[in-house]
Amino acid sequence: MNTDLNDKSPKGIRILREQGHQVEEHIEFDKLWWEIDRRMLASPEEIGHIADGVYSLSELEELYIRRRADERVAKPRNE
Image (tube, rainbow, N blue to C red):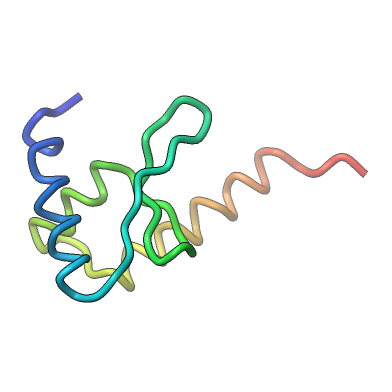
């Protein structure tokens, strides 16, 4: 894991909180995620990209929506 990105996570979290967003740690399947505004999850790497200005929150939300759609296709619900 890239430690530079880990070091940027706190900065990305601080940026989001300063913008008025709620950011909380969330563990799912033994993996760390950051829950933003109780509506989406972002990886520490993605939070690092917020700190770098690579992603805006709306771009991050688009990535989240795509990731969730891909997960649904990979794991169809049992009916």
